[in-house]
Image (tube, rainbow, N blue to C red; front, side, top):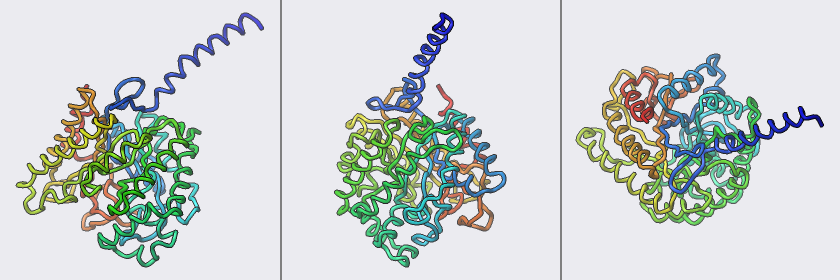
Length: 431
């Protein structure tokens, strides 16, 4: 071998030695109570963008351009972490709602091979913009199929019962059965493997090797639904977490949980679930309207109470995160526009004040290297707009931040909401 050949081999080895640590560090990691990226603490302002891949799958001629435009906009606002839906199960109506489509798994154990191509595109474009993705692998709620669909496929819910609008007690009774339905869980885990081991058709990366993905979530807002299901729920979280970590040793894993509110006030059980070693960080969601923290007719008078309850809820879970020595993310929070109007011309004064409170708490944590690592507001509505005279989503409408069963424009932050974006930039772009 010539001296010249030896020289080039030496240079190649040095290049690999230098590059390898950088590649390894491109995955978001956990160190005690905070997240890290490239060896530095990772704190972020993010958004929910659940519909990103569905915009691509709608097949409209400007779909790709819309997603790129929205990602560019988010990047310019300092929003670099996006929480997205990675699956849908079944087709048609469920619990009185027309679920989002198309489905990854339209029929039991049959997968739509084109579905993940939409996510492939979004992830590849996010990588160009140094964004990170949080992907949830199923849903507690009906708008994407989720756990109720697995129960239907396995004979636990009739076709008629699945389609009709259930009352709250019926929905709790049915959904709570998922965790003890071994065939349901088996089907869910099969879908998890299908997603996690998928190869991106654009950049050739297996999802499990893609540093654009920050973490997997077991589901969107998985609840026991009934205290009697707590033990089965805990076993499901533990076994699922272990299974996902065996499939993928690169990425973080979390539950997608709402917090104590979803445990019927049982903080001890919430901590037990998040103490599972494979769960890397805690998540909470905050929904003042859904949780009855104010009345529509007295919202202005109730608003100080909304702020105080929100801060107390965050603080309570922040204490739990420190006890468990794990980071925490507020990955859903939202508030309607002033006067509960859906017109984008209406103001967002109360929403802006609400966002400011949460962003201030996040900023304090960032400055002090504390456990509150990230915030993802619900939800980015992008370039979509509510349709005048129409309240709910219809097939072929542009997707926005509000899922089909919710009023379109209820909680969405559209790219035209200038006061909200000015507020977000004040925090996201600050050093």
